[in-house]
Length: 528
Image 1 (cartoon, rainbow, N blue to C red):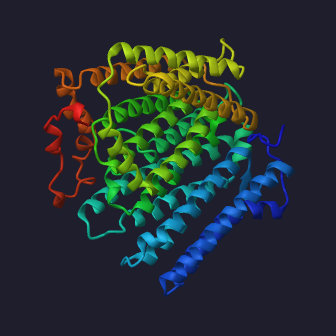
Image 2 (cartoon, helix red, strand yellow):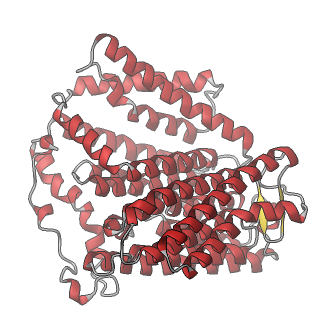
């Protein structure tokens, strides 16, 4: 097997295992040393040193993987997907630490934030490099616990405490699901080593206990990725400092997707787990996309965007499109880190777009844009060798990409060279998407897409989403728009319905089970 295969890993020397573990060790040691520092400036110096060491070690690990090949031993492993995500998390952590120092300067709990950032990053990286189920379970739980302290950074704010309480409940349920799932896997397949587990994933012969374990893993990912109806905490943790939001959305919430990709051969043999992922991902993607169109707050819009994007990633996992899911994970992490850390610029650009927004497009213009998007996406896919008889799920994803390009391809209001430039950009995006998918397919060996016809339901849902969004854009003040707006603004009130449980809404909050008053006042969609 080639060096990039994650499923056939040879034993390796201790020094290479130490190199792979070094990012985790550097950040964990940095968290301990920063806790002992009495001066915040010294704690930040330790944090910069630790995050820089982690980034350098992650880069060296990727280079060593390319030259010497992958390996597993001493509880850790190296493969192309893991090395890529480890480098991603290390880079995002390095950027966030440098951004957070001036942002949090002078805060009452500044030093606790340093420790929390480093501890969360260390646990996230431990999930990525783990080759032992016990290490994976402990790192998974530790990441949630470390993040919990960061979410309550402003512990004097009731809204922050309410959101953190929700996160605590959902995270502990996800931890329990993951721990039980990994124990079932070890007992049913007779090993605690992830590499050996994947090697024993015989098609059509996965024990019932292992299939049940995969359903629990999928449920843990749904909870960690803030899928409906367990999304409320992610929307409401905007009280946390911006560096914490960036870390959460770019490096923590997507860990569920990485674990799914890591265990892809086992998940491919559990139809129930695939159905759960596809259903939860489709529902969340569609609803969150509609909710986003009603929100003004940039940070809240970004939070709903994360829900939608994580849903799309889980849908890709449910369809067996593992390379696309990995590509989505990397791209989303980089985008969200940039979006949160440059939130001020995002607000300014959003206001400028709204001030200069043209009149609403007509139905014919949107239909023509969609047809052009389909043609360009098909051309890009065929250019890169995608066969017409390829997986229907893969073509369905291409269709969704085409529909997403529609705003760039509408003949109105653009004209002349501006429209040509926009069309060229759309084709470039489609070509880049399939090019990166092709490269990841060559680097990372994963199971073939599932034969289950789950793609048909997902395709119908996204076509309905496109049609509904088109109707609202064409007629933003119609009776349909006014009737649907309160429901979309309130996220179908799923969080409020689930929040009637007293464990998620403390009595002193005064909001248990109540719908937001603003959500009951429909506003003209055309003004948003």
